[in-house]
Image (cartoon, rainbow, N blue to C red; front, side):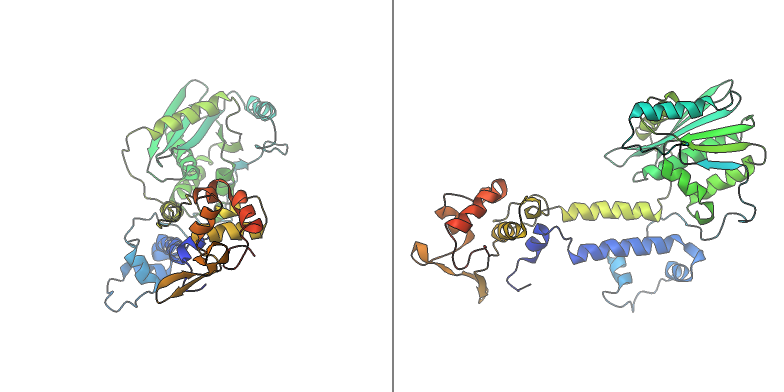
Length: 384
């Protein structure tokens, strides 16, 4: 791009995140994941114990992370080794991420999904223990977990307040982990059914040889202990289809969001990355501060239902970077517009001649383009 090009406006119009923000995002992802390995990784162990930064190379990735103040965060440890011998496995733990038939939460009607779920639940022995879990998160990034335990002779309702910015996926895992911890203290029947509406959580645990996050490791250890005396089933059921147990767990999770935070859990590297990403996205969506620019969201010209020529024309006009613009001695110079007695063909002047203003660029872009194409076409304009 030319030196006269307003780079921030062009990137905002094209919905392309600036390089410095993308660099911060990728650095955060890399170093957060690296730090979570702790002593399990040689590079991570070296960086954690390294304190002499006097000869740190300027603008190196590590120095940029130091400038972002991202190196001293408390990140949950991620295990790189298997929890137990893969040859032993979990022989009495069964993972069922489907309901027997091929189902789609988005395409199948709720009544059909509810019928399939009820058929599974009704086949569970009356003496078995049923555990429903759920996770919730509000717009303020407050998180909670809910657990409903249905035993043959009693029931238990548990709600948990999780750390802010905890993901819904991890809130589901926290609910499962807490439920297993509780039933270890109870007299449990031979079969334990964990009915969860998070298919991803069940699939994650079923791939237990690749599990490394602390919560999942705790779940696997509890499963290993409980499976010595019980058959344990993980069954996926859809959410919001009118199942009492699932709706109860969902309500408890939403109530847990409003509870006081009693103990803070460290965030995983993916959750810290999501937190950083939301902050950077907020910066990116803030429009550039120029007195002639009024676009409120990135990629505005791309949303116009027209061909590329129209989008390019409107984008150039909105940013003030039309073809006739040049810089001379630090001053903007536009080509003369012969229809108006050699007046410079600035975007504002072109719009004024047609009885339009800059607001029309955003409210009626096709009208503005039609004017430029049919009436004001000439040297220095945005049209191709």
